[in-house]
Amino acid sequence: MFLVSSRYQAIIFYKALIHLKSEASRTYLSFLWWALEPIISMSVYYLVFGVLFQRGTDDFVPFLLTGLVVWQWFGNTVSHCGNAINNNLALISQVNFPKIILPSIVILIDAIKFLIVFLLLVVFLWWYGYPPTRCYVALPLVIIAQHLLNTAVANFAAALVPFVPDVQIIIGHFLRIVMYLSGVLYAVDHLPEAVRGYFVWNPMVAIIDAYRDILMYQQFPEAGPLAFCALCSMLAIVASTLLMRRMDPIYARVLLQK
Image (cartoon, rainbow, N blue to C red; front, side, top):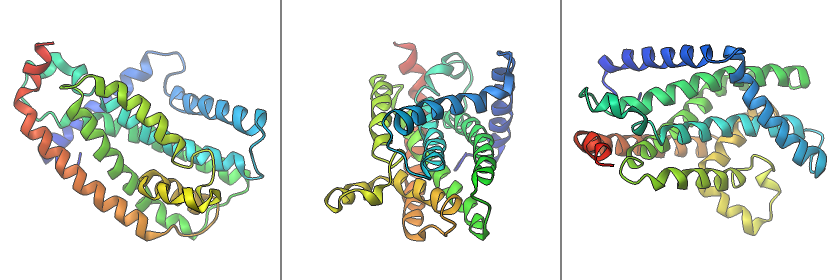
């Protein structure tokens, strides 16, 4: 929704809510699936890495769950936005409106789902023995930083896939690789010094570490990496928005030719 005219923001909110209600109405468990799906996914990872491979430590369960919840917000947003324009060909071929609205709707939908799952995670951590502290005041800043990152990467995915559909396939493999390079399943600080330097360039490492610092280790996260991530993301949002505005008039024609 960044850099979107205020007159379109109401449309984005309305379309997101309609989509959420429609999605929930298609299953018996309705809204519960938004929590059950990530829980099932996290259970599989815990079974493989925490039980079968016995890689876990005393705090492995909260460590893993925090990393997975945060990562799934990023991964889902980028993956879903890849087809945000392609999936609305009937709409964009009949109505002239800024195409940046389409990924913005998807981004908002995934953000709402994340907040629900994140709230469940926080409650679980309290029950598990990680009570809230004054460090929680930094949580909104971390969430905003990740939201900026999600928006930047998702906008580029949405902008490019209509022209090169293969990008959507590449996105799937890219996300799988980056996940294993983001410290979701292990602590980056425990890696050899020679290897650790390569992880500095992955913004999700700083984001995930920031959540763990607040929720698990009861300390404020490092401000430098988060500020740098947020700044770069804002610049990327501006660039991706300008790109989509430039390509806006030809999206319908390109899709209709395929």
